[in-house]
Length: 269
View 1: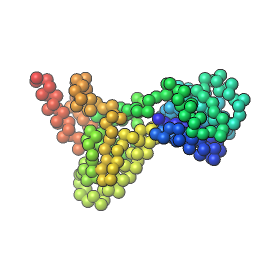
View 2 (view 1 turned 135 degrees about the horizontal axis):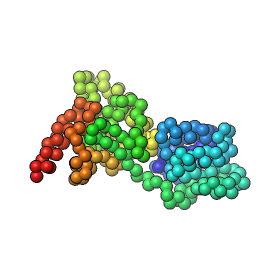
View 3 (view 1 turned 60 degrees about the horizontal axis):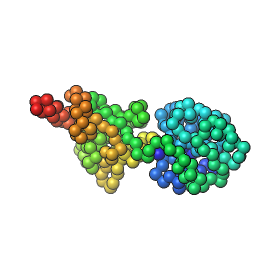
View 4 (view 1 turned 30 degrees about the horizontal axis):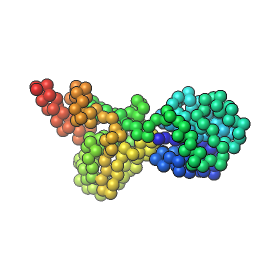
């Protein structure tokens, strides 16, 4: 679950963050001191928060204005006002805001508001991953932006392993086949891994990545992938394969050949 916390007072924002974390420990929480920066995150980063907890009286974009603009940009987002001014309650309900809590806010209040939201998206969502043709990752039907192309390639390699553990040596061999010294490539892997974690964290999907000492993997249950569906016996996925698998990566050519053979066997039966 992705939750925005918005308050122009740093201490109040920290208190709000702590209350949300206490009520929903698994949530990804993004903090904003200005309503305008929260809106920018939705516009520029394609984030779609499940819930926004926002102060009302703020400089620039007020909480009321934030609520109106947020509902335009992300209609499914639930808005909850967090304020010390009871007179705003009527205005909150008039604008179809999900809830209203008074400061000082605590975890019990946050939990009560979350429990009253039947239409909040389930905590378990899936990334949509396309392996056939060119590798692409989609979040809420929009391409996921990667800061580095090799970060995307690292994720592609992890996807190709179907949830199997990948060692640093295996990743190094795939991404830098001409570089044999792990001492050279290991710092690169760490940078890419950090970048990948931040990218997934930004959309509330950090749980897709599984990291243990010396290896990493992806959680297949959090991914909707044509390649995985093919292995699960989905005929539609099999028929969608046209001879290309992660076409931009040379290390994926072997898998493409294996899929070609599988497709031939299927139609010869």
